[in-house]
Image (cartoon, rainbow, N blue to C red; front, side, top):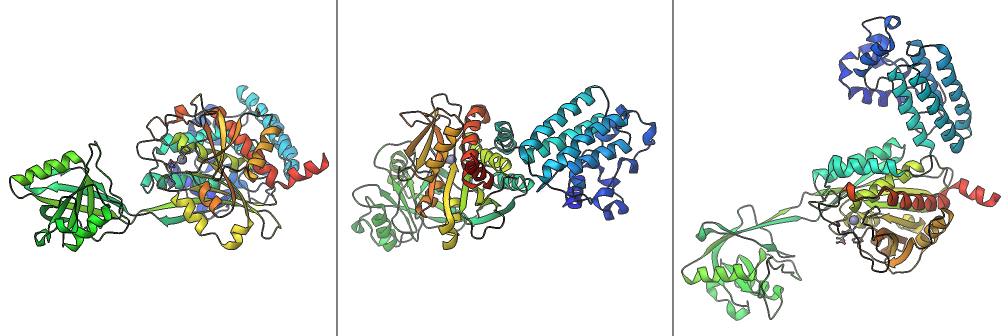
Length: 575
Ligand code: BES
Ligand code: ZN
């Protein structure tokens, strides 16, 4: 991965033109060095000059490019103590340090860290990396190393801490939330922005070293409709397309309107043939009205409301119609009838179906070592949002939290399989999660024990101070047992978690498949009211609370770690 990753990073910089044939052919350890490009000799340069030069060459000092440079890399992914040590040595040889004492002090830290890596001692690694960082800051403030060397070593340190720090950090989650809700913005189901969200999530999971896949699925047809009165200056009439309506081609159907009263069979004469039937709502079903119109040879149906409303009536058909069917308001229906009293009225009705839309689930898998057919634990969220809303709490919050839990757990040895999943197309009817569960084999379902589904886990709306743990049947299950144990362990107030019955999210298909599942959401104690920003433009990052993200993150990380970690069990037995 060293060469590939180094080169792919490198290609993103402006310094691409500096790559020579020999650089491309070389292994990672001998990839581009500053000496390849220096105009002035290294020794002649003073530190500020080097910094100016290095500004032109972002990413040159990427310690991950050394990972496989003949040194044992004990970390699963990314940076290791030995790669940082090599980076220090290289900076030293290239004159980035003011003296060798400073470089040696930093290297000594890395020698100790190599040992802790061998032991996979996460606590010690994080502690010593923090010590290393303090020393690095001191050296920097005393100008013992160049700004470039400082920055590169600091970035590597942060990355290495990220690999081993098993505590959930709301800061990191908030960075994801920023990237999703502001960097991308609304991620409406089936749009290019939803797809950008998918790429972001996939890339973040991959950086953590997970086995990542995307699962694509078709979305239901997106219907768009238009009714124009061609005999009246192409007057546009607002329509609601009936569920079960037939489609037209892009030209639609054009014909005279035929006033068919309530749409009984007797209301249609031979004259209705080839016309668009205008029918009043009421007395019997929409489907019966449509059947009568179809039998009479009408080419389309417009149903107008029988009560006043500002929005057009949405007719629900119990079957699929062969001709287009729309609903309009009472006022518009009566207006058309009055136009018909003075002469023939002609209309054009178009119902276009976009059947090409797709969405994706992103799945990151962590498998236990040496365990065949392990039990499976799901930590899930949905990544799509509704139109006109940045989808920060709904559900950038859940997705960012899942990404950060995945980071915290990346090096935790487990005896169960964990699947971190971000579902697409939740907002149009749990489509991604329903598809995902439908594709599981019976064996996978049998091995699946629990689903933690995070949806709207960060509102800052003050009254929503309770974390509801919602199951489909209202009964406590393994989700409840593990999170209530975790919250006790974390000394979280007893009243924070609240068992409740609620569906409306991606835990439903898991429950339906017989898997213990629950939805997490902050709501008001007693009333189960939720934030007023839901599905509005105000669902933005300003209305998300890092503290509440920290609480849910701590609870789920602890619950999942205690349920799956081999180490957690060793400690339990020992105490
Ligand atoms: N996050 C919401 C679900 C939700 C709403 C949970 C209110 C708790 C309180 C979710 O994204 C959503 O809006 N779901 C749809 C349901 C779906 C079946 C279309 C909804 O509730 O309308
Ligand atoms: Zn949601």
